[in-house]
Length: 343
Image (cartoon, rainbow, N blue to C red):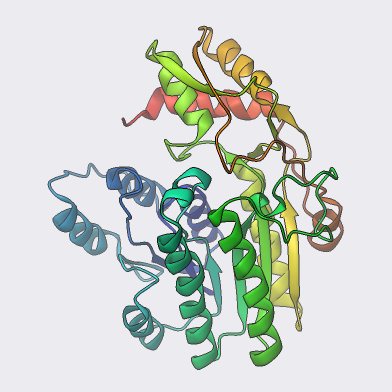
């Protein structure tokens, strides 16, 4: 099969492409290497995902991205450093390549930055996704998997969070864009018969995790003996989901949508276990065998108090079965971090 993966050089995307290639598929990766964090990290993700162990000599971003396109192109893998907001550039890719299914992971991420830059989040996360749907319709591509987020649940009082819960009260622009895309996806399904699955990811962590996320940030600051920003009293909690379990859920979603028609589904992908901020920090301290220096700060606007996935639908519909306990996942992440810290 020929898959188009947006955001394929990011954390989740690079792991997904690695698995798709191992399974014998062809992949087109579209990633704009946004300056949200150091582009060198994404280059390393890309090389690792395709099994290229050659040493990459960095110079400047423009030349490095051009060189990356040259050295990674093969019969079953191509990378395009394009922005999903640029419909003309996307159309050129669709025109030149056969695509069986689009897996859309690209987005402007982060709850707190979205409060500062809401219009940019709307432009990338909503308009960019609509560009892809428009091209799917134009080129008769009928299968689409979209990365949504647990943030759409906001401060949902009912736990665990179920796909049937009302999610019309987001508390950040980021969450609002993710929910909007789910709704617009139904429009394209209804009008143009584009089958779609929207996967609500719950706090994904593991090797190649973005450096701005709490587990990575805390690990780095603890190892360096620096203060960590600790928001609130540590009672907020998350349903942390290990990257291998997320990839398993995406692969099973691909199998489901390929084997069935008239599909519009929203599916939670979580671990279904809740870990408080205090518990997360103590697990890191125990694994690193080093105490954290906390800088206590007030809760931040847009942050949800708790996430907790009801994964009954995922288990029943696609056979999803996460099996990585938090302590084991943290151990694997820390081992990777100590080998590969790139900051």
